[in-house]
Amino acid sequence: MPVNLPDLRSAEARSAKPGGIGAHLGYAAVILAGVAVWGFSRATLQPDLVMPLVSTLLLALAALFGVAAWWRGWMDPNGVTFRDVAGALTLIGLCAAATIEPDQMLRIIQGSDAE
Image 1 (tube, rainbow, N blue to C red):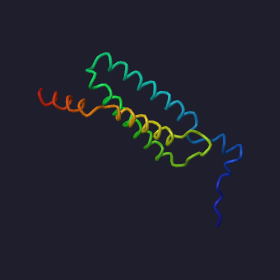
Image 2 (cartoon, helix red, strand yellow):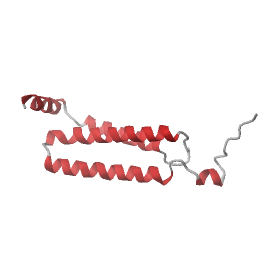
Image 3 (cartoon, rainbow, N blue to C red):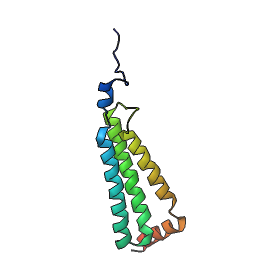
């Protein structure tokens, strides 16, 4: 029994993108939320806590987009998918985590032990 796979070059396959506009809007919403959290935390928290909070938020949201991509299953090679967004958020989160200095983390951990 032959299996009929969709032809990705056809108009129907291009119009039925699994990531569709949801992946684009999700990425834009997460980036705006990240900038808002960064600005708010910069104004209200200690400077040592800002980047760990932002990087943790971005990596957690990348995990959520990864779960959404896994749940949707099929990938569209011609458009932006939830997997693409999860990868971009992971990259941005790891770059944000790379800016954290070891001394900064020691001050955070020693400050929480003193309380």
